[in-house]
Image 1 (spheres, one colour):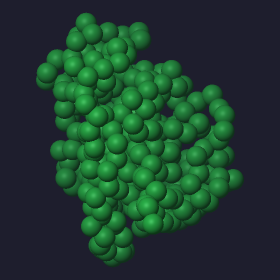
Image 2 (cartoon, helix red, strand yellow; image 1 turned 180 degrees about the vertical axis):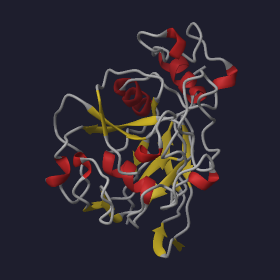
Image 3 (tube, one colour; image 1 turned 135 degrees about the vertical axis):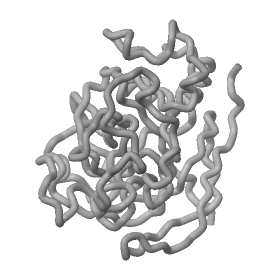
Length: 281
């Protein structure tokens, strides 16, 4: 049955908090974001942040340099990755294809086009960029830009991980796993110690996430300083975060990976973002 259009409320309070000694401003206001999926969202405040490899780090990939300041307008982003349960409602509403691995049925979580109840709270995988984009548009939202994704993950203090600079453990995220079917993934939102300064969950581990941008290894050297949207054209899209199979060295906020937009695999999912309504005078 088609879900009724509802208002997903992103709730936050204007406040200043301190993380690792650095003040991070959070804007918390009741903002109505028109959507069909009703997924909870977090408002990310307008303002600058530093994107790319932290200035003090020396282990970044060439495509993660230079560290540069970016100014973003306020936006909202899903608190959690899109789950199989939400994706099922999308399929029922639109008739869209079910998530499936194109070559290896052992990588499928959906069985014969049906969603087992046991995977409802797990992040959806085996979706390509177009599946993710279509879902977000159906929900009245969009994929986040690469810059939006990174700000939501790191805040404004140039940290290495969503939770700070403490090395990752299994108290922070789901990582360093081998494929064991649905047991490999965990329900979204269970890692309280791993959430970002803005309260966004699973920005590291569990699954990689599609973002809107085309990939360009040298984009950071010439990207605009305000609301960058990525290159205008390309052949591969960017995925961010890190998947369940990733080991410690790649569990970093600034890790960038290029992927064929038609690729469907068992370690990539997504979350949506939304442009906030323009305030009325």
